[in-house]
Image 1 (cartoon, rainbow, N blue to C red):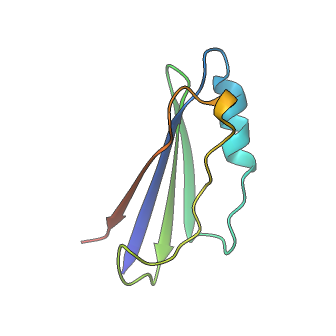
Image 2: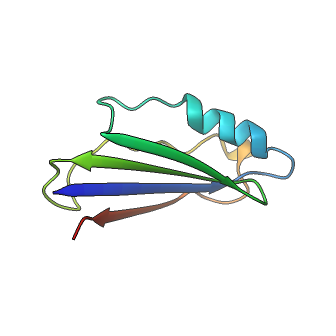
Image 3: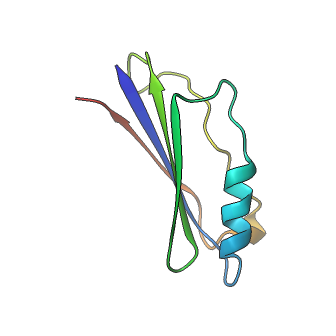
Length: 84
């Protein structure tokens, strides 16, 4: 089974590029099978990681942390999905 973790944050005003750079620099150990990073207007950054072989949504998997509160406009949102 594959689990996808989605991490989304909104940058504080004017810090969209800094938040994007911060997210790209974060490494996960072990590395996911796949990782993609997206940016959207308003300084939003989305990172999706795919974890193969995880057997349930509660599996312990490495996740991106929350950045320093000065970098973000609101708390980070996180979602977990399982492949169906």
